[in-house]
Amino acid sequence: MQGSQDDESSKQATLPPALYVVATPIGHLGDMSLRALWTLSQVDAVLCEDTRVTGGLLHHYGLKKPLLSCHDHNEASRSLEVMARLAAGERLALVSDAGTPLISDPGFRLVRACRQAGHAVIALPGASAVLTALASSGLPTDRFLFVGFLPVKTKARQQALKEIADVQATLVFYESAQRLAATLTDMVAVLSGTRRATIARELTKLHEDVVTAPLAELAARYGEADAPPKGEIVILVEAGEEQMLSDEAIDQALREALKTLSVRDAAASVAAALGLKKTATYQKALNLVENDA
Ligand code: SAM
Image 1: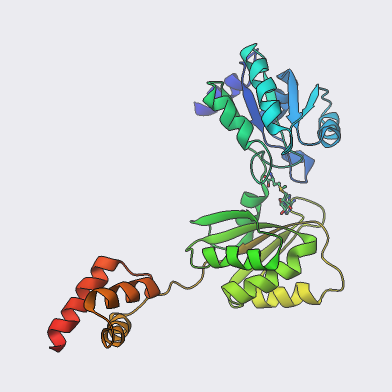
Image 2 (image 1 turned 90 degrees about the horizontal axis):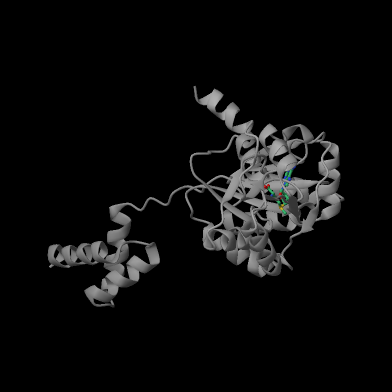
């Protein structure tokens, strides 16, 4: 049975040399997996963003390990040391302050360097705010785009939102409580206030709060509050209505363009404006010219 095989492998006496990417809880300390605990108990050292945070977490589970800081500022130099240690047969774990490393957290450059050098990298799944928020939101989960943190400045944030406005998938963002109101205002302006959205706050924690409503309602609610909400936040936005253009609408745009442009230019300009395929639009324009002649 698959289950018993897995039980056996988790009991193996020695952990093979590798970089173990270990997810830790995003709030509720009960969300640490048994495999994560066992792996952390076996490794030679733990790479972490903040040694105080991870030291405290390990202490909670009765573990004590040498800790090596690994963050955005020293990831490149740390990678060399990690690879030398892996080459010497060590077993190392990478964790972040909370959740899954590499997901809006450091680790990507380290994992890529290890893989390129031919070292084993083994990821242990566990908590991550993106999937936890998605699973509790009630928004469609069949297709989603994880955007992570948006730019902090309004102009850049609005531009980033414009680029993904038409994506036919649930959009998932990480955001700080301080910027929530400003980001929601930009989302209403760029994505429209009628799109359904979810604010998932303090997931897995005591004051977990998941609210789904049209974007305009959420912007009003969090914009009017005297103080920003407390805690950590994921924003999810349902895909917008797909812009289905009728054949008549395309023909009308082409007829208008053909008044002043050649068939080729009219087709190119309409295809660009409406996001259509160039060749098919050119064929449509040709048919129109022939039929109207
Ligand atoms: N690596 C983490 C993960 O796997 O989710 C994310 C790290 S990122 C630096 C931190 C952001 O994740 C927070 O600003 C917030 O947007 C989101 N987040 C983390 N924990 C959360 C929680 N318990 N509830 C809601 N959002 C959370």
